[in-house]
Amino acid sequence: MKQISPNLYIKEGHISNIDFTNITSKLARELGFGALSTFEGIVRDDKLAGENLDSPKVEALKFQIYEPLFIKWMSEWQEKAKEKGVILALAHSYGVVKVGETSYIASVMSKHRRAVLDLFASFVDDFKANAPIWKFDVVDGKEIYALERSTALKHSGLLK
View 1 (cartoon, rainbow, N blue to C red):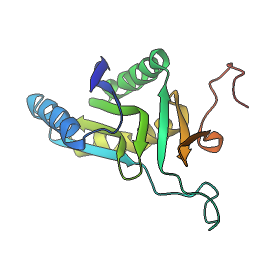
View 2: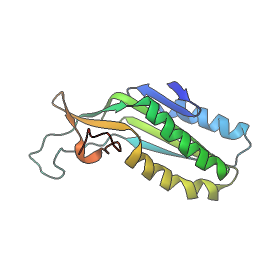
View 3: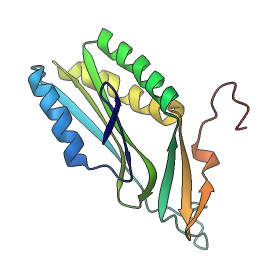
């Protein structure tokens, strides 16, 4: 894993939950925190058209990350978290991640559980909606842009 800013990591291919958990668990213990919660995103075995039995199966996802905006997005969240006595850590894949593999892991830690639990859902929801990461479904070895699961960058004019 490559650290691109404080507590923000990227890695080509799937992420080892053991490696990331070791990093965040060590940090939480060093800081004397009593709460650490981790959310792991795993690539699902989906079909392109949902429940349509004739639809091809997604065999993997391919991710592209725009690092400068990803760092900015995470920094803004880290500031919000700091005000609440919380530390956020996140690791995300780029490139191809196969079905059943981990594409991202987020950890939230603090002295007390309530601060962790209060922040976690909004962090993960905002990540899914606004982090500058684009998904492509890999079907029969071909990449298909996952438009319905991607968010346009404001003022970019690239996605509609």
